[in-house]
Image 1 (cartoon, rainbow, N blue to C red):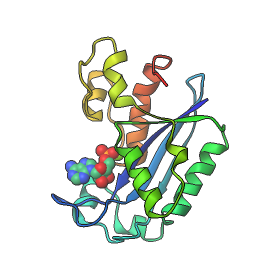
Image 2 (tube, rainbow, N blue to C red; image 1 turned 90 degrees about the vertical axis):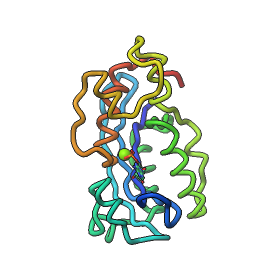
Image 3 (tube, helix red, strand yellow; image 1 turned 120 degrees about the horizontal axis):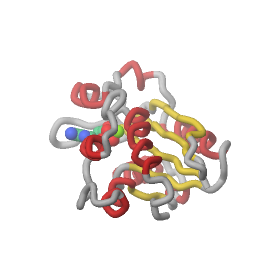
Length: 181
Ligand code: AMP
Ligand code: MG
């Protein structure tokens, strides 16, 4: 078994969304069943419905129009992600901070007519964290708050998929063996 700690960024707008949110970055870290990091993955994705990023989106994520302009569209980016996972092992769990990432993956798969079975094994680190973290928090926290309570630095840029994935991997590895699948 391997664990894919994954974080997505997507198109967004200040206030009401002007189009369906689409994935613009897939960032992930692979942890094996001995709690070792096997590798990292990061791909930018070119949105199809609304290819121009809002200023708000670039400010939030630090992802620029140039970053997504020549990036692959979702089907190709997802294939790269799935190939990256498959090089390690066939059996995996996707782990993310909350259920947003699974929902967004599903939405983009449906948009592009792609299979969603590969999302079946998913768990939310955020929602298990209060149960296994020795009373550190009684309720699910934002990732920034959880890192602080756990005594970890927020490295990199918050709201960048790869940096968010790396940061949540610290919490995942700290409680390795306690997560329920
Ligand atoms: P995160 O993993 O927290 O960086 O968020 C993932 C995605 O959720 C972002 O790329 C945005 O599309 C959306 N998002 C997060 N925070 C906000 C916000 N304050 N306003 C609008 N969209 C947001
Ligand atoms: Mg993020």
